[in-house]
Length: 105
Figure (cartoon, helix red, strand yellow):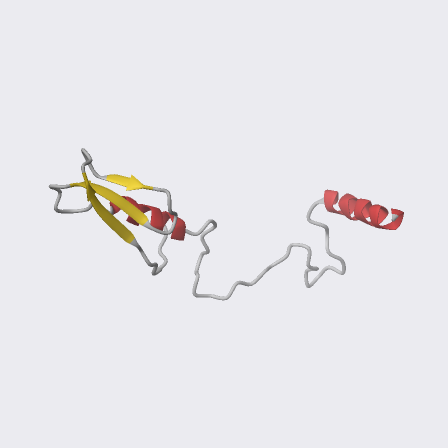
């Protein structure tokens, strides 16, 4: 569940054919093409709406999308300390390896 307004366009093509039931043709990603039986007088577009909503869902929801994002690093020194502690000691080893690889060439 997420609470974020969005708007999107939807393109639906409907074709009446001799088919037993409504079918969704997924050949074109931008157009929802339905084939419906000759006698059917409605089109169920719930699958289109479901897909469009899923595509709009944020991968990593933000707490409050109306506020500006402020990046806070744990690597910044605190007010009372003079030096920052690294987040993970492996970063220092990776930096040393990168420096070594750059100096080889």
